[in-house]
Amino acid sequence: IPDHQANTVAEAFVVHFVCVHGIPETILTDQGTEFLSKTFSEVCRLLKINKVNTSPFHPQTNGSLERSHRTLAEYLRHYVDKNLSNWDHLLPYAFFVYNSTEHTSTNFQPYALVYGRTLEIPIKLKSEPEPRYNYDDYLYDLKQSMQESHKIAREKLVTRKIKSKQGYDKKENSIDIHVKDLILLKDNTARNKLES
Image (cartoon, rainbow, N blue to C red; front, side, top):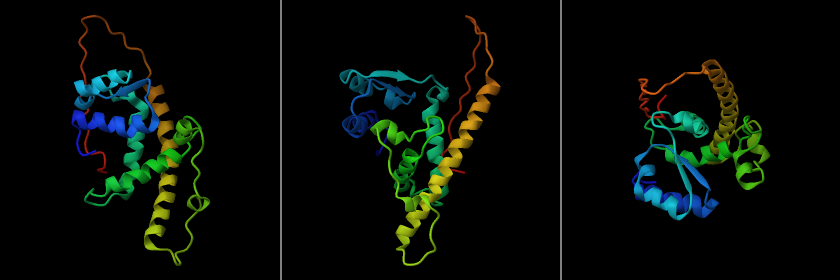
């Protein structure tokens, strides 16, 4: 979408999500002004969508989405050019790889969970690339990119899941908070996600 204005985001949500997948019962959004706007809230009210927001300065509330964003950013980092100018052209391929890769947390492809059937990948994309003979450069590069993306996705998903569980288990301790206790929030202002 061209910008993050409330009207643009609300229209994109209706056109690219609701019209394609149907009306969700609930939507969880971050604290972005576009999602907190009267426009977006009114769209949710008209469509009878239960709108829930993440906690401020606590993106872990939406942990699975944050993990998928990190995974997509990792894919893009491998293929984006030095000027970060071609990421929008690579994004559909990254989505394809992400949605067609079985996730260790569910043992299903995200695509299969949404559409009820697996997304079939041509066997040639799953195998190692053949020596370069008469391939058109674009097709050859596309095949290699998709194979590498699948390999990276599988490795990253397994690694991320293990680290996430270890981190959670390590930090899991109860904190007693009482009325009038001083609570400090850490502002984790994000840097450009495509930078190494």
